[in-house]
Length: 193
Image (cartoon, rainbow, N blue to C red; front, side, top):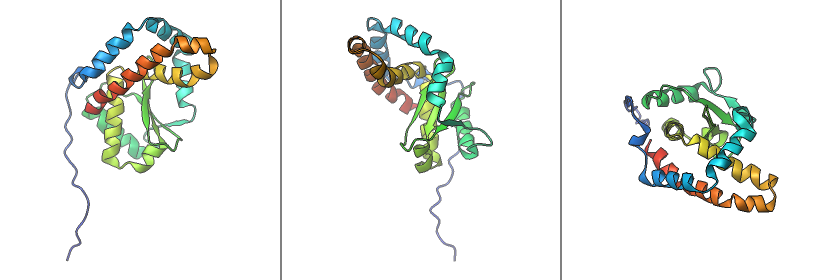
């Protein structure tokens, strides 16, 4: 007599050939991004943040406690990521990192060359299908061009509050609020990815 198994049969993977990010872009995301770009001073602040940190500085800021995923490090995660990149038919493969953080979360960051950071807490608790969904969500952010704005939001929320004088913090508050509103709505688009 054979024992029943609880294993779920693998679903065949489909490759979404030449899918454009606008195919999953949520109207609320599009509207919030337009509103964000219309906030006075937004473009100037974006240029200043980029000029101050630069691409290398952003990478150091977000990857200081992270390990790059590859065939020899986190091989299973690397295989899942390859499946996701192939499924979404994205020609570039953004770098993937695992950060030693107990929270179950991930993010897409960067300016010119976006990358994805997964917290070790998420890696620990998610099964393969859940990890594919998380990786697809974050790759959706990269494909939609969200990494730049997410990076700016993280910098403004965490770095600027401690480094800026009170009045300067008040001056950028409208931009922070607009970024937070956009970020919440950008999640709708990436969930669709």
